[in-house]
Length: 102
Image (cartoon, rainbow, N blue to C red; front, top):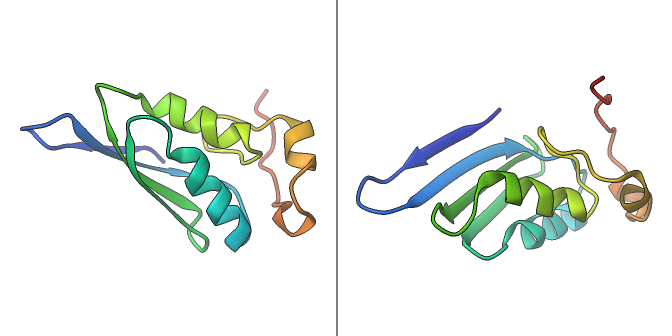
């Protein structure tokens, strides 16, 4: 799922996308990773697995946010985390990973 909205007077954008995780530790890690330069807000819902991000489209593209989250071990609906990073997550954070697309 990928949603974007733009406020006409600014380049402020909102995007929502799926991020895999399990718990409060995952939530803190995901939100911290998503807050790269240009991101003003990041909130991950543990139940829906949806990350909501507000960002400045002049500074960052959604792909970079996906990559930042995957870099800390959490698969998104567009970018898969490296296996070695995923394996380093705390055991309770080992979520069921989606199948690799061939």
